[in-house]
Image (cartoon, helix red, strand yellow):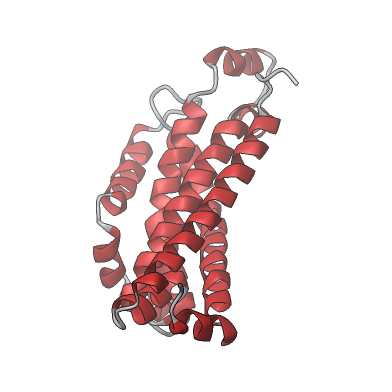
Length: 226
């Protein structure tokens, strides 16, 4: 039997709001992170010594910056970036501040995912485009990104699930969503069923993201016979 607390939370709309806030933070943070991480990953790929436009110093500098932020555990990065969040959105509490920190944490991770996906593109396809006179911008937009689309989509799914986990962790310093409900109404008030309900709801969201993302990647993969 579920506790009376669960019914009160449901009737008050707190659980529904927690689901929405978790989805909102995850999708918006992923979108902004990809707006930063995708071009950064492209630059890392093309400026590599085996890329289409090698620039050793730029690749090294960007690589150090990306690796620096990726090496910091998220819980520590959140605390360190509180002043940055306050500078950007005017507060260090609430969803807006958490989204800033999620973007800072996820963008370097996504950049490496994008770089890795682009490296999977067959070098022969790139060489064929170059032999036909395509410039670097055309190779990026017409060859690299389209050919890597399935891997990029699966990378987006993995990134989104990772950001979802980060969003739950952000509840420890003022974030909202299912993580905040699990802590405030479950852990602190000794209601284990609330904690497990939040876990169950999070798993459902992850499964939906995974299934939809996998289906889209499958449809865009030209190697699969339809």
